Length: 473
Image (cartoon, rainbow, N blue to C red):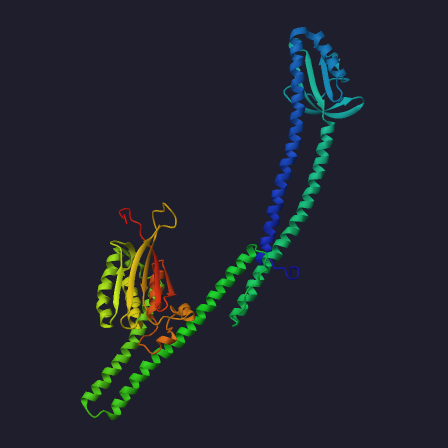
């Protein structure tokens, strides 16, 4: 059986992450050190070759003007001025005699076919490496110019040793850094794992710990915690909706059953039996209406109605709704006031927007006292970003009434399904009207606001406007 360290798994994501970090760190360090090594050695080699080339130019020029005597004098002068004691010169005659220079004999390993050579030379009884080049002069004279590179070789050896030790230290640092990265990675993973495990066991209050440093790990933790808060609120909402559905559906169903049972036992005529059946049908229609409203909200929130989006004039739609509800307002001794522009090009589902406005106007009329007024207005707000030609501006629709209104706590929950304020408990309705409005507005990329009017309520809808090139309003 293969052995492994306790707490270390090859399949561990954190371990693989640490290994990848270490390998990348080592490779990067090796590439950098190799660049430094080759750059340094290359620079030294370049300086040696440049020095030889400068000497060669001067000596070949002297050979062309003064011949052998002039070249011998120049070599003697250069050797006398060689402070670093690394210059190598050698001039030989066609018969092999040495005419000038500081070598005892012509190097045996010189290859005349090669321009540059690194070969051992004997100087002052010591065998040293030298970088050399040979020129064949007129008359079969040979000129060798070079530089003793023993110092450079020593520097190269020292630099190589330093690089090796540096690579060793970098390797140790990479391993340590990879272990630290693995530990940090495991902290967030284990924290997420512990939190999700606790949630799966029913502890919905569990959250990932935040260190408070404001780093990326804290960002991930905060985002996951916000997601968990959202899930918790949705689950609470589902529980509340389930309870509300059970309550709101049970009442009309139980009422219909009781009326039918009472009619079955006590009805003495066909007319009484029909009246009981008609009332039961009304109660069951209320149940059907609640189910249909819930289905519409679910469809809208799922976005399945976007296929019906088209461009239409929202101002004309608002005027039609105002004309329709003006008669209803008059029946309740109310005035419906409008302030609408001539045109409002808009992209959306016209039927759904009519449904949303109908719910808002119906609530305004239902909860407003006689001899009051209701205001319906719309305007196109200036664009938040100048010169943005697509969704550059916002359409704001307001419905203001002077009814019973809501307190601050009720306003915060008004768009929840089946929620009904205390002041509206005794009025007909299922508490789904504003929830449907909220779903329609969000489908159109807008926002629904409910504020106080003291007395009454202000319902504000902000939706993005379609900015057409022909739109001059």
